[in-house]
Length: 445
Ligand SMILES: N[C@@H](CCC(=O)N[C@@H](CS)C(=O)NCC(=O)O)C(=O)O
Image (tube, rainbow, N blue to C red; front, top):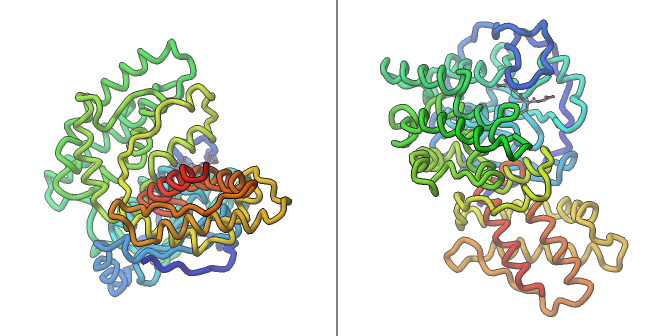
């Protein structure tokens, strides 16, 4: 079972002046023009071999020992705010509060895969960015990393990934050991991550297939995506992109592909993973990635990705009522346990959030007690020793008196849509959480 510890409200401390600069933002244009140059970092001093060795040893069990912190200052979430590795932190990772940023996910994934120990500082991208952060990082973009050994600051996800490879030679490498493999990886990155029409750019670039508003544009844009898919798919047909282990190439494309697989199916009816035979070649790659503890720790679930697009990018009601996302993340007993534990440990904050934001009449008699009872029943159903399918049947509250059942139903509907992976819990936990809430809802009326 996952240990969850309470933490005091985390107010990011104002960091002291960094000793190094990062390179410019590529995807967002807030960048300060003066910062538009490649990363110049302080040469790394020798990393602590003890902590790197410990980190390496723990890499294979990355998710098992993950701890969560409550974050009462942010969304009522539990957040895995520090690394799976118990070694002294080698760096601070500056990343977005909600874990929606795909560039942050790249760095997070690399850290977990390498077993390098880190702590996180969160930046809420939905608010004006704090001055301490814009003073620190000229682009104003997350992610950024500050290394404990020499206080060097690096930004731009690609540059941070390269830096991790250089600084932690004893940690599991994300670069193939053989020259041929390394060359293949670089060729893939040049063409499919940095090229003009790389796979993950085509659907989302301004007015791309995934973003276009005018339905008349869609056939042409879909054809463009299909060209990119046809070009890239041989790299995904045998599992990892190069060789038999995750490399920087996989890390760079994983956050985008996981989002596209969810979003394109729901909003464009385009199945990157397996329904259409000509794209089925991607599935071995998804399965290989999802078999690694590091990726399971940082990936989101399809519903989270679609909710983010629906809410943040304001898709119309028509688009938002298209088919449900792929059930690519299975319900598992460990996911259910993690979800139940996260909910129980964070119960007060979740109750308060439901009372404030779900639309229930918080001033009604017994509102808090009713909301709490339904949420505690949901947690108990997740924690109950199951029937083998990963989610125990929710035990109905008997009887469901009015108005308790209306309030209970609203609470369950709210929290099943509110949960966000991996912000609040892992993708597998979130899938179990939604399934348990759905099962419970069927018993209410
Ligand atoms: N090229 C950058 C892109 C980073 C980026 O665009 N981050 C977004 C979040 S997904 C951001 O910080 N946006 C803040 C803003 O635009 O103000 C990288 O690879 O690190």
